[in-house]
Length: 201
Picture 1 (cartoon, one colour):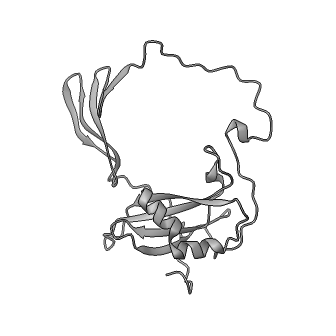
Picture 2 (cartoon, rainbow, N blue to C red):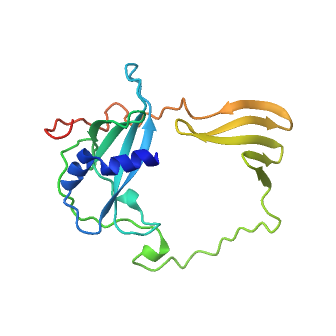
Picture 3 (cartoon, helix red, strand yellow):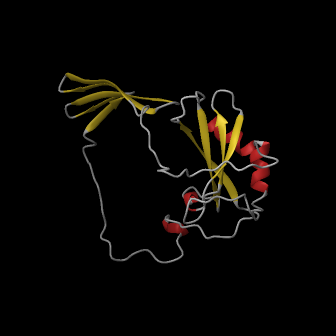
């Protein structure tokens, strides 16, 4: 994912599309690659959809999610080739448009030191303490919690995977992952559109 992020943010076609935003000095772009599957049986490539956001400042907790960019590059995970540029809706409906200069919008922030107004005064402190430590133990990838015992692993295709899940010494699952999970965000209308452009395939 880090390699795809670096590739996306340095790719000439992505940089050319970003130039159309005409961003002011100090406003950067960050990338979040998502690997995805499709219902199209003819599509066998592993693809990354790169969602782009404006980063309003150099701060570890700035909320870049409040400033999404309306174009989204897609890359082949195996060959690192640029596949296409998708255009995302940026209004109240599913219509899309070509990239236009950015109109300044203030980011919605949550970190205390980035808020303009005072913090709420009507909340009582919420303090969680475990002076004897947590109820679970870990030994490398092995996790033990009450009567549960399992191993945690990760891979680039599925993310987190649980192995050898047992409860009270009985086998429950050999392997658990979300590799077959599909989330149909689009409903009946697609939320992306491929627009013809002379400089973007």
